[in-house]
Structures are given as C-alpha cells and as structure tokens.
Length: 122
Image (cartoon, rainbow, N blue to C red):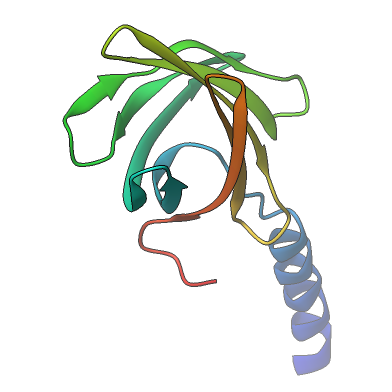
C-alpha cells in the first residue's frame, strides 16, 4: 500500500522540481568595474509580459529603468538608465543557474557583470 502512495507522490515532486523556473523579477546585486574602480550595483526588476520596469542604484542615487523590454523567451532583456544626461544601455540574460549576465554599454565601451538574486545562494 505504501508503494502505491509513494510512487505518485515522487512523480509529482519530480515534475514540480523540473518545472521550477527562475524569473527576472526581484532584487539583484553585482559588482561593476569602471574607470573609477569597482562599485556594487543593485537592480530591482519587475516584469509585466514583455515590459521591464524597476530601478538601478550604484550608491549615487536611485535611477528608473527606461525602455525596458523582455524577449519572448522570458530570459533575455534590455533596458536603459539615464544618469547625468548620459544613457547607459544594458542587455541581460537569465542563466540556467539563476544568475544574470549583464552587458553594460557606456560611451561605446562594454563591460559585463554577473548579478545574483538577493536572498538566494549560488
């Protein structure tokens, strides 16, 4: 009798675990290396379909995400942040391990960083 109950339970748990999917939504932190050295940067992302909104904060104030778009795959996205009359372009990819690889373009220079979701261990 126990086997009859245990087999369906294990199947349901396996399906639930395999369907776990990381999302872009949430608070993400990373370290950005720029001309003035390294700085910690925090992003708060909120998705609504193919629209991405949120904020960016690198210790110099909080800035709104602009022109945020999420691709149909739900894992690739892009957005801009305007800081002191300069537009910084970002392109991101949600990785299978739950991190985000973010490419940041400032004045024709690109840098990449890895973001980790706050409250999750990787």
